Length: 282
Image (cartoon, rainbow, N blue to C red; front, side):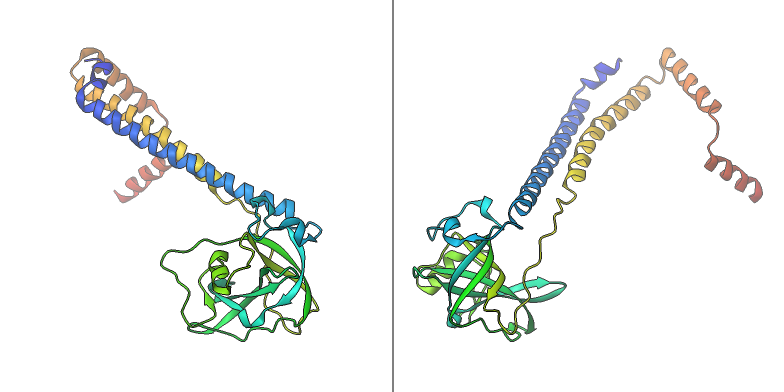
């Protein structure tokens, strides 16, 4: 039987189909990792393009309450208004440096009556569902610099605790409903500075780490696995063909030649060490 006849048998066609399936899954996972890497690179590009820009007037970036373009993320804007301290909110379950805490959201009412949500920083937890003391926001007219961030999605299974000023996420549509309308739902601001400056301040957000992660190496590994699947199939097919044809005179000659070459092969260092240990044991 030739190797091609063996490969066309029902059993080995089945193994070939399974090998193709495994390779396709590996390739799909590799492609997904490439896509994840592209997303990470796009986020890095936005940080590099916008994070250190000179702050621009708020109205130039967000003229309407629902304005937003993803390329605006991290853009610093100058905003003037008055903090609505009575409507201040705390975002729950925000870890930082290994600790659980809250982010302080204070609405800023602008001159046109619209409201811009400002993330004034992070404070640690003082116990179960309890925040430490919130640093007071400046009163009266204030000018702030903040970096734009997009609204966050609703997280399944997480709701805002009733009867508290806590929220599960910075979902601006929900905050707009909570405050009765007029909120800029396209983006909120991550505080950089306030004028006048408060006596105490929450911990401000730090610069994001520009790291695309291990997606490239993972992607390449998945494609290597896809290649190894076919190599393994070919190896097993050849071994089965040799077994099936073990009584064939030509295959016997080839088998003898393989054994002769193996006998002539120089022993490895490990094999030499094993031989010495065996001799010592005797």
